[in-house]
Image: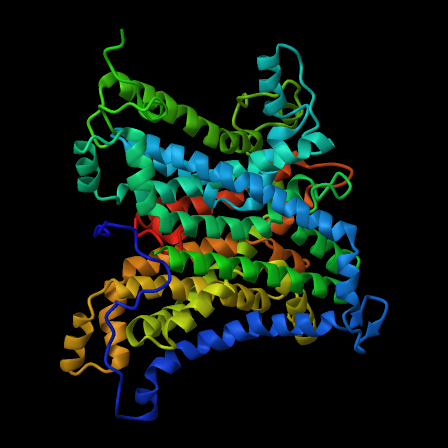
Length: 314
Length: 295
């Protein structure tokens, strides 16, 4: 099937875009105009992005703590320690557990909401404008907000549940081991479902209607049209949305930090929280560096594989 | 017997064939969809309402059980306390840091994005490298940055945090502006160059005015990213340039949690975002999807 002209644009390769002819003559500044334009940006990013990466790698082979400024070569001992660190694996597990639950929930709710608002609905713009709000507020504010809501005595969540239950509910949402994950997931899904919704709504609105009408004439049902026509067309956008959200989720820090501080105990500790605690509260500098580096390698691998798949899928 | 077909989402679930979403729905289906839309909107807005309600409550109302849903009379005492105790200056810090870093990132990011769009500088590789910088987890680089800043004496300074946010947001600006510039027909600059414009003039006099909506939308997002940041500010500020997110998280103590300040500070930290979003509705989707959807 030919790609309709209104299909969502591709993310990575846009080789078709028009370009200006390079400057062949003139002063040094003229001839290197295009490089001069990107130079400041590259230098700044190298300073803040690349330098820390290299430094992290370097320190991870040393043994720097708050007590000992031991910069001698420490080999792979920090990495070996990491392999035997149950708390690290726990944090990794928590991070991927939250990601594995929140990402599908946000995607499915987002798609359903997009379907609902895709139909003619007078005043749709108002709804959409209001639904944007959770996504753009600071995660710290979102977390604080849900702390207020989840409060066992002064918050409305337990009160509403009490009405539904018929008897008073006193759930300690951010303290009880069995309730901390639901609390984090509710907050996370509340904040980011609108993000998915907005992207899917825009992508589905862009789907060429003549395609759908043609399928309808051929006798395709409602569900078939969605699964076989609309979904494949918005697939590139779906990938990007999943990539953006997935990357945000695996480095999740703010919401969990406000809601539970990684507790009770280390039960909701994500990789980012563990790294923060190790680096800035226990000053295990080299060890944190090793952890950070492993984390970056994992993320890079995920991004690489996903981008590759996107390229192949096109 | 039902005359009207099942509505909205129900139509998918029941495999209803005769009507689909691009067709004009009946009044009855419209009513159901309105109900669903309103319920969804209430779910997503109720927490925000609650936040504002708590910020306007008296201490007695905040600590009432069962909770009070509607403050008896609007009083701004919780906000007054923030200003009296000086906590509100953290909002000012956030404003200064986010604004200045946005301006700088927009300048360098826009010219770099232009170079990528119009001269294909570095090809696809450079563009991918830029956007991949955005995917690095902050926690992984914040420690070495802290050590670097400590060495330079930049911890808890405006220029330190501004520089950091600038660099952190540059990849986003470059990526987005590249997309916006690519949308502009190249003939526009070619004729400007023929008319005797220099390359720099073609950028500043021709392209910037044409792409101003994209510039504005990108700037708003860059501002929001800096405004909402927590982890960099947590590590790199102490007292002088503490941002509102750091201040806010500080209210959650081991012993006591200061609900009045939490709610009032959250509201202060949310108002600029409301303003920003209200002004740039049209570009929102493109902005949050890193340009994957052109809205």
